[in-house]
Image 1: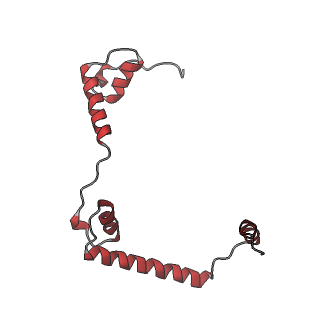
Image 2: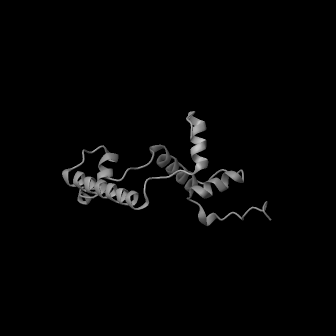
Image 3: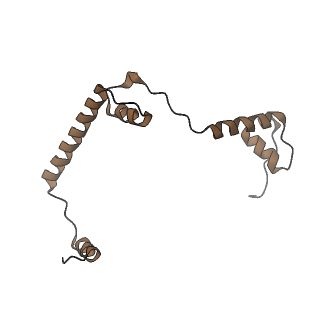
Amino acid sequence: MAGKKKPFDPNRCGTYANYAAHRRRGERPCDACRAAYNEYNRRYQAGPTRAVFDWAKCGTHANYNAHLRHGVPACEACRKAHREYRKSTRKSRAKATAKNGPLKHSPKMIAYLAEMYGESA
């Protein structure tokens, strides 16, 4: 049953999928399907659209990254939010290291690294 084609549905005309169905069947696509195909190609060739930069969301770490993505200099509120975010991640990382101790490699990993870099274990 894998080779059986679905019956053609003229009610779906005007879509890119039905344009492809016309082509698979060796038919000349109808005008509505050709128009849908042309619109699809126009959008595809135009490339991805970028969201408009939203100044109302300023003051967050996420919007600091949006400043960078859009090539807009970061405002003071976003720079401050970014500094606070980085500060909190540094603190939490330091707290985890203090609790668990420094990262320890297994003897197998130490031997592998010694072999890779030619150092004695």
